[in-house]
Image 1 (cartoon, rainbow, N blue to C red):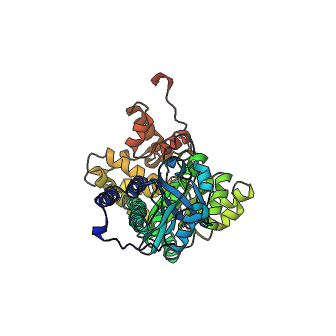
Image 2 (tube, one colour):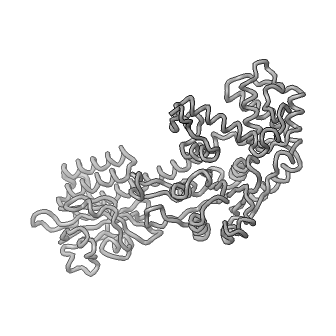
Image 3 (cartoon, rainbow, N blue to C red):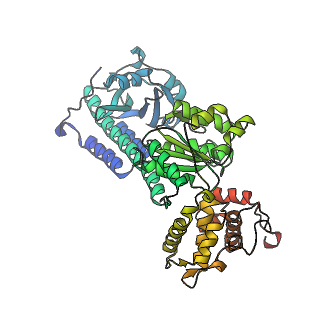
Length: 508
């Protein structure tokens, strides 16, 4: 056994070896695609050390597994993705000890694990294995197998391989940091693109904000309860930005907007080949929200199967991607929300009792807008200013008559409905002031809710009309329509189903 200390001087490295090291270093610096970089490193290692094969095996400490990530040589492609227990083999010995090994004949080595040769049909004779170490952390092992010709491996080979191992370790570290930054950046972009100001000073809202301030600085799971449109996601964001996780990702998902199979893929991610169309590995929302906050909206609508999987994540703080076997640990703060009566759903067998108690650690009831009437004038002014800025228009005033109508209306769709009403009014306003004619008939009094059916809120009616209009303008192409509306296709499909929107036969 030889300890992997790099001691080669520049003079002792041949021109060919130096060129290969420079090539591997260039590959490492030119790409953050880890498989491509590692493949370049093992290819260079095999060429410089003149061996029949070479491979990089990464260490998964959470599962105590070693995983082949790159391999060259006869049948090398068969090994990529294969994994084995980290306590096995010469690679396992090197990974645990952090020391290189030179083995002239593996059949005389008690550490040799024959299972890999059996899998690849490759016959290993001699090998050198070196730890992939960076900043005192061992990321895995790099190996070269079977010296070409009759030459045996020597200490110089060990030292050269250690250099390649160090390059590979730096590549892994860089890729991990890059992925972590991408996840954090996605979450921060989600937070920044939102109009996240909570507006109002009513007693009902002050009571909510008092609870938000009390729980924000903890890691407690929060359950937000309330009618549709009461600002549950906005409240979740408010908790996040007041928490120690404020500089990490805030990831939101509407659990009711996706069918069960797609929801599980969105939550937990999937491996390449997990199902038709899964051409590449995809990170799930739990991975994207690591060290941050995950907001699960409409949690009361998830299936029994998904409830079980979600419960396991909440209990164990780990999960497995769809189609995968690797257990992934996660550090995520959960904020869930629903407009359903979960206690009633439990009694009816539609929601698991154990999951409910996992989520109901710190419940917050959000009041409907009709119980916050003192806040209506402030909200109207806020949305008028925000919408005008978004549309690039001057902010219109609201006539006293229109304001009185807004304050008297019951707002069945709550704040979300108000936002849509104000946006519509700003678009219709040509005089610099919003009057009753620019308001929906439900608010202005031209039509009573009873005459228009009473069940469907003005929010739903307005949203449905906007979707149909966008579909017609885009030739009923769902991809173009979703883009025009600023939503994804899954969200659009959910709304088409919700509002029972179908293309008329005469437009097909």
